[in-house]
Image (cartoon, rainbow, N blue to C red):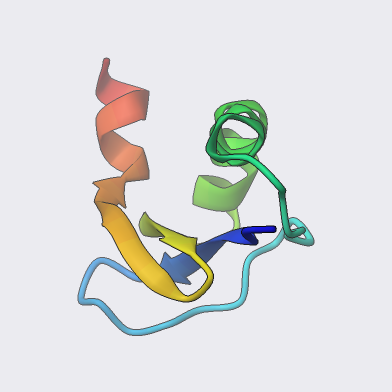
Length: 71
């Protein structure tokens, strides 16, 4: 079974520890639902962008959390 996870970065691409404890999800939809619920907290905690990973393989990113704020 696939493990879906997020990687958290500053705007310059350096890794950072998220302010919200991340999980592992069994579906892409569950991982994306979680990021939709907590992105404001992540942004406030210093995360600027995220990458979605499936079993450690980059699926997409970087996805700016600032874009969500502006939209």
